[in-house]
Image 1 (cartoon, helix red, strand yellow):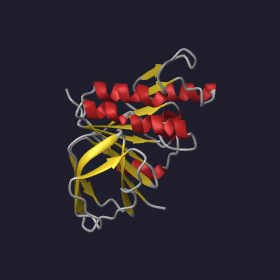
Image 2 (tube, rainbow, N blue to C red; image 1 turned 135 degrees about the vertical axis):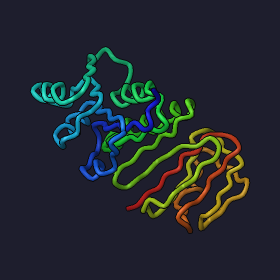
Image 3 (tube, one colour; image 1 turned 120 degrees about the vertical axis):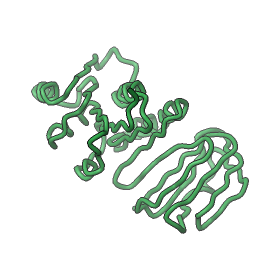
Image 4 (spheres, rainbow, N blue to C red; image 1 turned 60 degrees about the vertical axis):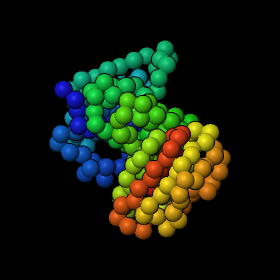
Length: 213
């Protein structure tokens, strides 16, 4: 049976405030240290997954005891990050949407990999978003609504060499049929002028980043 929403907690920057965003119907996955974070805050993950190389051995026992299911792998002989393994499991539940916490932090390589892997969800027509204290990131290849979530800015960044036919409504700086190329900063720091705005594109993949300082 398809899942409505999967929420993934990975091992990057995490805050207890994220837990208030969980619904009872959510399918919750803890990736590596993210699983320990959930358990220590009284949340039982539906799945804990990873090589668990960032937690001490005694904590792994705690994770196994506190999760409905635990999937472990060798930290050396693996091709996927813990976050991508969690995403694969999430997509396997046929969700309507996926929300990722703890996939940003000091490791820019992991952060970029996590942002780019949202394309895999989009290919399956699953809405995917990344959230932390300062950012809310989504991805579109067609049309999407942007809701005011309390962030200051909305920036548009191409994830493909070129994004064409960009039309914005409900923004301080509207666009009509515009083109953004990889490396351009024209789409940075726009502002919503209403509780909701719309972003439409004709071709390419466009990152939509709501952010605040």
